[in-house]
Image 1 (cartoon, helix red, strand yellow):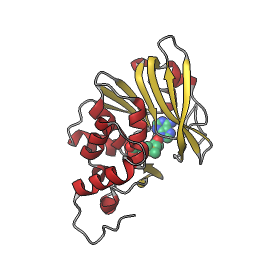
Image 2: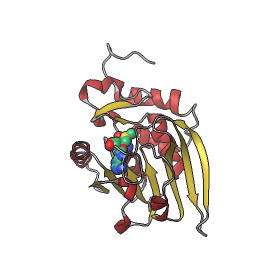
Image 3: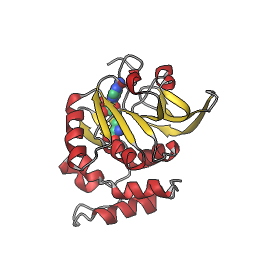
Length: 222
Ligand code: SAM
């Protein structure tokens, strides 16, 4: 890990270091994804006391026992979705709002659901003050999806699910993609699920991962 505590924080230098030394060597090659990982300021989504750690390749606490995901995982999930400017995206697990900002840079509209009000309120203030006007934030149980706004062309679940949810799959349009960590409460497999034009479902494992639990009707119990 790079020691930065005695240096002046230079966000561009920090972001470039992360991209060149962590993301690209680990297989993040999509230029649009790399560009947004450089552009979106991760330090604005974490507690001020952790600012110097903003471009470390690890998760960080954001309060309420929740975390902002590791940059590599954010980039990998984003790359796997192969976002297009016309995409309508559902995110389950707003957390800090960082992943929502990344998604919003590469798609038309993002609906993001969070179950913890404190986090959602903070993310809302933060995202709107940064000028994001194509993100809708909703307080609720994301395991139910958002049937009234479905279908979505892309779905991303940023908390650990016990299984691939039929409820969310039904809200994914034909030809759409979903990324979701699936497995136990502590260790999971990051899955990419593709729904073909004819509705057939294809699943692929991207890597092992460790997310906080998805808590809700179709997730884990609190
Ligand atoms: N995407 C977030 C970010 O960029 O900061 C990180 C998400 S954090 C790893 C997981 C989030 O999912 C937590 O904020 C947690 O409260 C939320 N969560 C867990 N279960 C949920 C549910 N059923 N519906 C909505 N949000 C949920």
